[in-house]
Image (cartoon, rainbow, N blue to C red):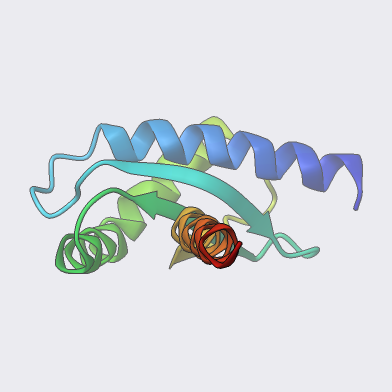
Length: 117
């Protein structure tokens, strides 16, 4: 990956993270931008977000982010110089949830192993 692309992704993560915190939409809960993946042609950006809360709260937050996309793109355009302003595609980052589930499974296996001894 080019240094320019890495820099754009890092800046986009920072700018979008701050801009999301400033949104006034009541649907948007506590949200963290975990990563931004920009296509090589800089026309598309996948924005991975982690949302604290129940599945319903996560769904509401994602709806709020989709409706705020034009504002967030504008904010990104003001703060990061790019030839093209990428389309933003928001995705729920389930990495933390999956890691927690994996850890619980490992603990369960460990408990079962110690009970058999």
